[in-house]
Image: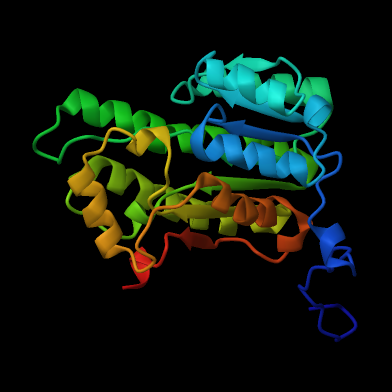
Amino acid sequence: MATNGTRKSIRNPNPPVEDNVFKSFRLDGKTVIITGGSGGIGYEVARGLAEAGANVHRDMVLCLNNRSKASRDHRQRLQCQDRNIQVQVENYAEVEGSVASVVKDFGRLDVMIANAGIPSKAGGLDGTVADWDRVRAVDFDGAYHCARAAGLVFKAQGYGNCIFTASMSGHAANVPQEQSCYNACKAGVIHLSKSLAVEWAKWGGRVNSVSPGYIDTAISGDCPFEMKEAWYDLTPLKRDADPRELKGVYLYLASDASSYTTGADFAVDGGYTAR
């Protein structure tokens, strides 16, 4: 309470808001880190942010797990700097060092997209403990490492935006494949996102997650025909998605168009989890 007897509001001021909706989606001058950006979802997300105005040659930084042909082709297609930061997201020291390097070179960090992930190929009793540890280390620990390293920068800046790639598998136990470790990790990522969103809001940070459904990427390329047919049967739209169909939701979350969106999870799954 104020000393003069009037009530003091705890309301934060509203940020500047573009009157033109197209301008609110612009990413000019933004510095973005994407993990797992050499293919699949990460590749197309990077393309989408670049197409929305992010200066890829100067301001888009891809943190990749390997120096693959896909990553080279990606940088050429986007006219991006040949800046391939090899980092294992399961190693926090590597992630923190890479983030620090980006901030040193570009002076700021606006968005962290914690996208790197690997699948599990067996049920909870069929896989080995070593396999469980490997998937958890990348899919859950790695996501937290990215958020923590970026979040420390964001807090010092007083702004920043973290986007996790979760999965519809964090909402449902997929069939016919068994993948309890992956499912559990992605459920953890969704709740981590919500928890960090509440914690970061007090100093201006935002955190959200995207939960893709079945996407036509290399990860699902070796799955049997019968398994994919079962997926389509359980998906109301009766198909999987082209990864380019995810660009819009990531662009929304990365841009100022989503300035009042935090703690949310966006299922882009063809209606799978709506059943």
